[in-house]
Length: 210
Image (cartoon, rainbow, N blue to C red; front, side, top):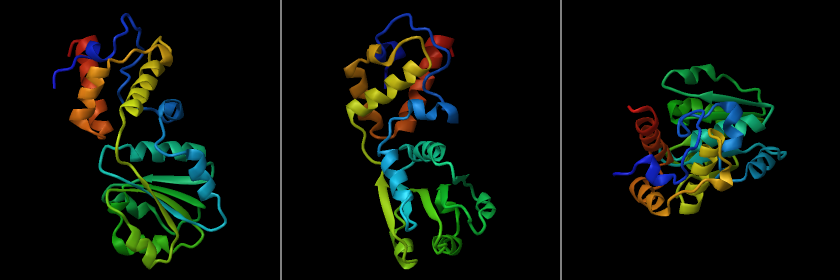
């Protein structure tokens, strides 16, 4: 796909502090993220008297981990774990009211069932496949948040927020070319991570020459 950064962002002479399409620090996350689901509503659900499991469900690159990190910023009494094949062992019998787990598939099934049976803990987990059967088996109430689909308007908002955060221009003054935006959406669909990685490289070539 042949798109230059200047084909997408039509404003000229913007002064940037960082590449706007790279990773986001935790302290900047809430200023940049464009939530797929109301954080206020999710916190309200987690604060109910009865514990619940919320699963962020979607393919890789759809924004599940970013939303999990942002939610963690908003819940003072929460604990978050980013898992790989071995790090699940750090999760013992939870005593936190709210436990957030990224890449829950790294936890073996037997261990997951033990966690779901922890009656006083609410969980928010990211997963590529639905865990409904596990939750029902453990007689746990659950809610699914689907990370699927990306509209042209939502994509434009995401890019404008990032550009404004790391530049000298205000968000409402960023001019995005609709044709280039449609090309990106057609090529990447809702794979926002892949799309941002592409723009990150485009920005590097145009502004840093490599």
